[in-house]
Image (tube, rainbow, N blue to C red; front, side, top):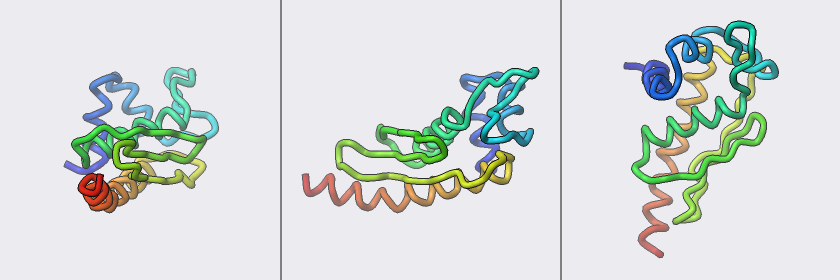
Length: 124
């Protein structure tokens, strides 16, 4: 199962299949947000928070604080004072390919941060 499919399955814990399809299968503008039946149901900040939360849950077995500032996502491990991920969604449109690339970047950063967290945990 690919990263996008795993994310879709993870999202279905809280969202309907129709909502997940609107988020992942249909391209949408960052400024306009996810639209369903003509209504905006989610903005880019909430979507990026979900993406980061998913990536963290997939790669780490610890709680990490996620902060979103417009199109930027920051994830922090408060216990070890480690920046787990800092990524920016650079595109104006969200589509399946862009989401998969963003998730892959988050996962890469999280994997790199694991070593730092382990060292800091030992030093504490």
